[in-house]
Length: 218
Image (cartoon, rainbow, N blue to C red; front, side, top):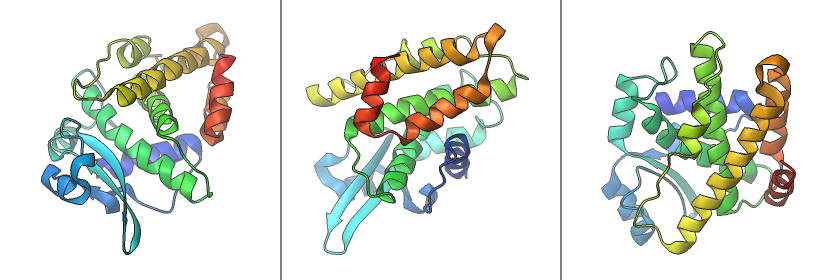
């Protein structure tokens, strides 16, 4: 299943495995999502991680639209990531990122803010796509990736002001951070991919406030 392989990619990238498989928490039917979380379901989004409190405790779920998964199954981004499947890849990867980071944090007794989840997902999309594209092109650096992920964006018109601001802030911070990583570690004449990976792993383990402080000096 493509989501399991995406989660494995993140676990390897950050050396941060979790005990839970995203596939075990997956739903792909929007009607089922709405029955579980009601008005909290985003009717225009193709992915959503949710936390439900009920009499049995807390339930976590991952929604990725079935059509997205079917398109990814027919055009596998872990074999060939290109303009045809990049959007669907980022949609699914964002959901997997939210789930993986949430589970990793819960296992350590850490609280997670919504902005932190969105920021980490933006970094995850960039770092994982860069890893795949570099591998798939025999080491050639994908120079257009940063612009495609961070500059050519739009937000769902249904978003409320607070959500729109959160997504915009996550995009802005992640764009600056990922550009800084490129300049420090991936320029051709002084390329240090091992240092790039070490910095990514440090950032992943930072708390929300530590991430913001780290971004301030980028």
